Image 1 (spheres, rainbow, N blue to C red):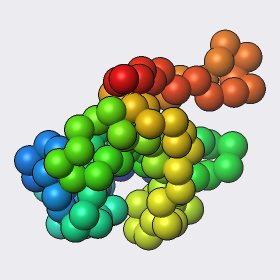
Image 2 (cartoon, rainbow, N blue to C red):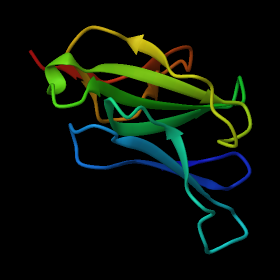
Image 3 (tube, rainbow, N blue to C red):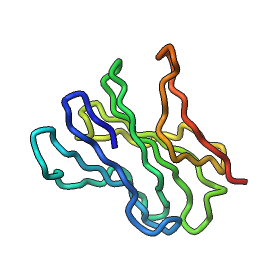
Image 4 (tube, rainbow, N blue to C red):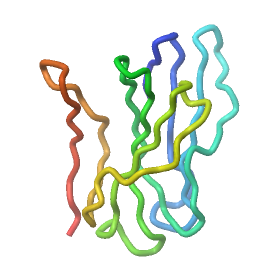
Length: 130
């Protein structure tokens, strides 16, 4: 979950059986003036891949919402996973094509990035599965 500058709450999750084919990343918004989530949408999907562990952060400086998630070939295990990023300039209305940001095999993440103390850089906690 991430709170957006207008007070909306954005949520992302993976849908499907972890590690199998067609596991997708879904996204939904809870508007600040509502108690009901808007209809969820698919943010990223490939029937041959297994997408997992989505997390988001909003960069106020660039006004961009970034969604990160792991990506691995279906049925191959997380030792081949890498990390992708999608970006949205309209608070999740549309997403960029996915881009590998960490392509080392076995890269896995579960926690959103944090800003450094001086706010100059982002830190992404990851680990590797050999």
